[in-house]
Amino acid sequence: MKTMLIAVLVSLSILPAAIAHSGRTNSEGCHTNSKTGDYHCH
Image 1 (cartoon, helix red, strand yellow):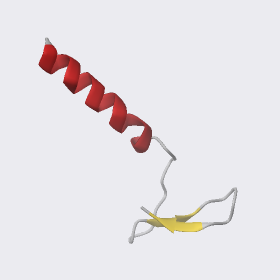
Image 2: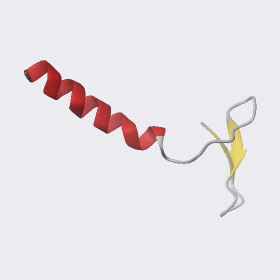
Image 3: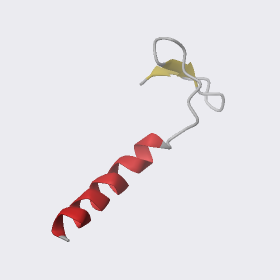
Image 4: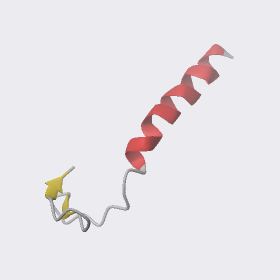
């Protein structure tokens, strides 16, 4: 039970980073933010 709870908490803590934006990165993992015009890499 405790192991399951830890696994769920870890999964939930990772989820926001995984869905931060839709992606569309180039081959180097970079893209331009269409709202701000900023170019950044992940």
